[in-house]
Amino acid sequence: MLTRVTVTVAPHDNNALKLLVPTGVPTPHQVPVSFDVRGGAMSLTGESTTGQMAALVVPDGREPLEIAYLYREGGPGYPDAAFAPRENRFTRAAQDLVYDAINIADAQSGGHAAIQALVNAAAEKFRYAHPEVKFNDGSEEVPYLSCGLTEGSCVDINTYLIASLRAAGFEAGYITGYFFPEEKNGCCEDMHCWVVTRHEGTVLEWDIAHHLKMGTREICCGLNPKPGSRVAVAHSMGLTFPELDIACEKLMAEPVWVLPDGKLEEADLVIRQTVEDLT
Image (cartoon, rainbow, N blue to C red; front, side, top):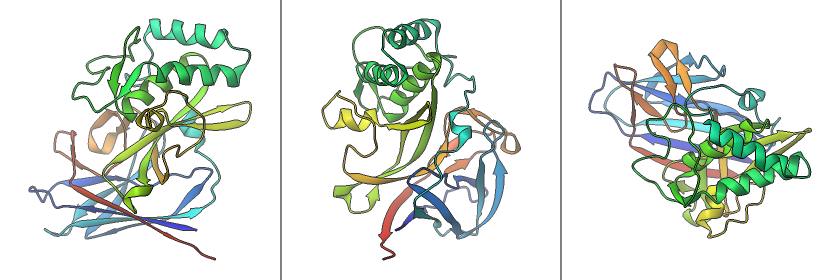
């Protein structure tokens, strides 16, 4: 099975800007085998905290850019670097969150039960939404949510979950990519993210946001509780690209324009997927 993902990027008013694009990462389910850019010249730039490489694209002119990924079914697993803890404001748990996570984990019969309990606890904190103000905006650490429901997207929910898991001493990785809902016939509107845990040699995948969108807080491990398919493009939070003066950027997923001051600006995108059966 081959999965092709094409991201068409509308030109920017400032044709001197460059586009920063993740190049894809492997999972247990897929491996990226091709990455191509049409409509611009591409070079590579390195992310200094994880070792990931990203494409830096200079548009040829005023026509749309086309970013093309090709994934083959079956993969070697998630990158080891995704599980490595790195302290920054998107991953550092506030002390109250550390205490809560440790208490939840210690009350369980073993590591896998503790991971499930931490996932359930994170799910109980959120109502799925895309608030303008995030629960950790302006904070140098991930705050503890003590009561009530907090509005949050997949990014917000997984920020909290990763901080909780790592605070309790578990290996966890934050993965970004695209999810294509079954009912949209190979289209999606923006990026998606999920969490993977690794304990005693077992890797489990978690997608709280999709469970909440389906109206349940009974969270099961595994991908695509909401029918569809996905690809992974990058991992981790708090990314730094020294060549571009980008420091501790929250995440890398969709192509973004790099402004002269190192800030990033969303691009106007059209995202499509096609699947080919090689048999």
